[in-house]
Image 1 (cartoon, rainbow, N blue to C red):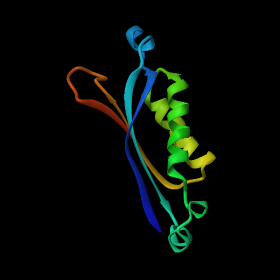
Image 2 (image 1 turned 180 degrees about the vertical axis):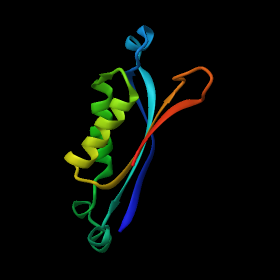
Image 3 (image 1 turned 45 degrees about the vertical axis):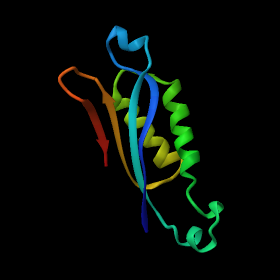
Image 4 (image 1 turned 135 degrees about the vertical axis):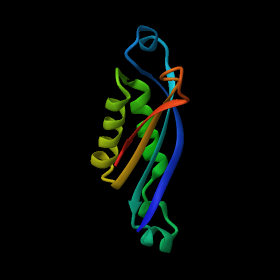
Length: 113
């Protein structure tokens, strides 16, 4: 088994509870990783035997751009659901950061398993 990591995807979305957050898109940063048996893909050097992380990333970006959640907890949970149910990825770890969520911090971060 290998662990594949896609790190620091920048995505514009509407997320937040304050009025100003509901009208202007802001950047969230997503990192996710998962376990994958890469043996067949490596042996054949063929994408059809690999997890297409570009396709996975594009699906997550499209989903995130069109949503308007109040909480990053909800957004993180829904992204996790897509990764584990739609793409059937195993042992997923996900981190979602919202920069400038509060002035005193660089970002607020939600991590799922």
